[in-house]
Image 1: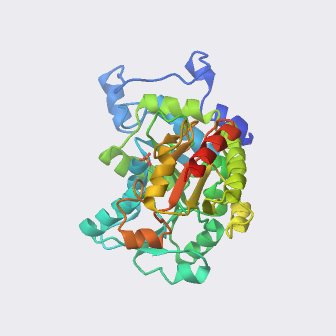
Image 2: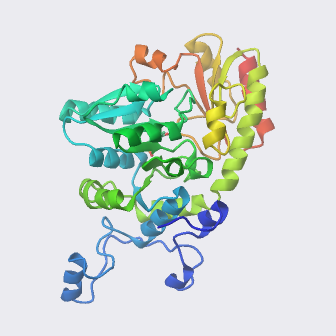
Length: 394
Ligand SMILES: *Cc1c(COP(=O)(O)O)cnc(C)c1O
């Protein structure tokens, strides 16, 4: 599918669905069915033989899921989209499709914990090795690429230190070696950043976060070239089978409609909280790509619409002080995940990144004093009131 001429704010509501096809139903109907009946034995034969278009069985395709896949493809400006039962099902379907035994992957120096776990498993089972790169310069990235390198895998902004990687630069280097670039775009969503438009090849999402946006669904999405995604659909998606349920696809279609207005508020709230955190005597460092004082701010301005809704900050003190601060909050919720209406706060060293061995964890910048905040949609003064009280208690 080519880029829709509609504005993003219109496409999130309309793309991939035409009410005329569904008895005029305003919202996309929920096809909560495992299978589809054939009018005759011959029709079943034609469907399986690919001579006739139509649904067969919901692991191979479902109309509610198709609407979601077409919508996300349009929003990321890609040729085809695929939906999965979790972000990790999406990440693993892509990485398994792109690699074979003894290959090599270059990845950004910070990775989502379970993506790190998947790479470790691929190394143990199939000798698919990986190396981390800061991707701070063309030379730094080039020096990590080997003849066996099958792809470059990038997260930006990097969780939880919020470092930003220049995606155009990464895409240019990848072209020199003719290898694809995969970008985990979970932290930005296509509203803030569209990696395919910057020359990257595949986008993966944990749709659990901003795309769903309401903390009620676990799901994943992939967007890229039709040829590659056709291959993923017929191999790792179909045969490993980490598909999305029609109901979860329906929830994502619903959540997507408000993505731009939600993200505008998440970003505006985050900017206000960053200003306040910077002034607080108990806060030593604030990491936020939208902050003008952040060294990555120029790259962020080049490739993102705004800085996003996630902030990390360090407090003076110990791990126990960080925990004490969290325990002192009144309505802000201690929880991992991000992108929900509720502000969520967590302690990466003992929660999301507790599996990472301490030396690697510290190298990634994840100290015992680091706290990650997913700024929600509440009135920002209320968020700050709660945070300020907790910080003052230290
Ligand atoms: C949450 C997350 C994932 C994994 O997604 P699930 O939906 O939990 O499987 C992958 N990448 C990033 C950056 C995430 O935040």
